[in-house]
Amino acid sequence: MENNLGSRIKKAWNIFLNPNLFVNSTSGGSYSRPDRPRLRNLNERTIITSVITKLAVDVSTIDIMHCKLDDKDRYKDVLNTKLNERLTIDANIDQTSRAFIRDVVMTMLDEGCAAIVPVDTTLDPNDTQSYEIDSMRVGKIVGWYPKHVMVSLYNDKVGYRQDVLVPKKNTAIIENPLFPVMNESNSTLKRLTRKLALLDVIDEQSGSGRLDLIIQLPYTVKSEARRSQANQRRDEIEQQLRGTKYGIAYTDGTEKITQLNRPVENNLMKQIEYLTSMLYSQLCISQTVLDGTADEKTMNNYYTRTVEPIITSIVDEMNRKFISKTARTQKQKILFFRDPFKLVPVSQVAEIADKFTRNEILSSNEVRQVIGRKPSDDPKADQLINSNISQAKTDVQANQTPTAPTSGEESDKKTDTIYGNLPKEESDT
Image (cartoon, rainbow, N blue to C red):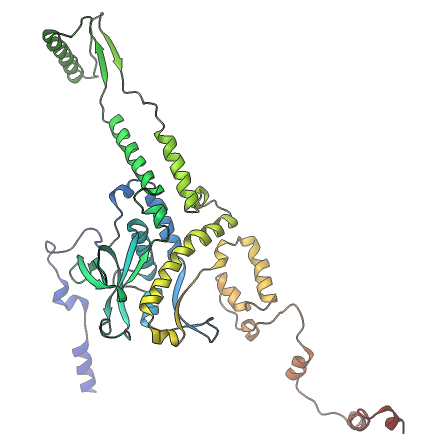
């Protein structure tokens, strides 16, 4: 007992008794998360940020799991592996699985490509493919080589990003499936970004506080003396406006002042509206999807044409790099699952649940899980049966307890046994 107590005391650990956790506030540390993805400077001030964030959030709501397939390559079960923990619980010390997927999508849409790098593994990935992933992170590709890529990756050991040369065979390189629309130099998104930057410049100029006045003097200014006299007159008006309390100045009766700081008519705003509508149509995103008023048909089209290609590219690349050939022969695969009931109105849930249970697609407890209810203790709730019709007669007889027949019933049963299967002539005889 003393040995057990002593070993427990030696192995005991308290967070406040660890001197390594007390760090000087002036060394290291950061007021903002250094591992958080940062968008490009041009995208941070435009509407592109809202579109990228919307896509990243919607993609991260889809479940990704490390699964086991059957002999016909159909989903059978979820494997209890470290890779599945990275995809469903936590990807690293800083990010949950959904935050990790959001990081992947935002980096991929902003940069055009994203790299998923296994940081901590049980074995060296360069020596064997039979390794488990303890943590993985998203990096920006800053250099391309024949068999390697240079990745800007956050190092959680030191607290800042570092450029690391990693092999392509162990790194999931995910390319944006919408690359020609979003990341090409002359794509619709890049053109819209440049137009929005021009609009910001015009807004800053109009709000800078300048008056933009033209003073028409009663004499010509072709000679040098007249030009110096005009400059002197301009300086006098500036001093009057600057030195007075309300910015009031006076001029001569023969002088005329024209103000130019009115908005100049151009077609920049029309071009921005045109490029915005074109970008939404090419991304299969409507304004109703962004403001949350889209109907079920519009949302299904958005998920089918925009969200699923993105999540498919992520899952396919992880299957290619993180699932070895031996694991593929063992019917292991990374799959994604989207909940179709999220887009269903509450008024249709009862009708859909009735159709799924009546056609023996889902059990009653599975339907209860969808609507957020506890499973029922009734064994019948876990069976794929149609409760609206009676069971087969053989099943009912199998569930009944046999009783001992009476003497009359026993004699009738013997008679049926002797003569029941004989031909008609023999039974008459």
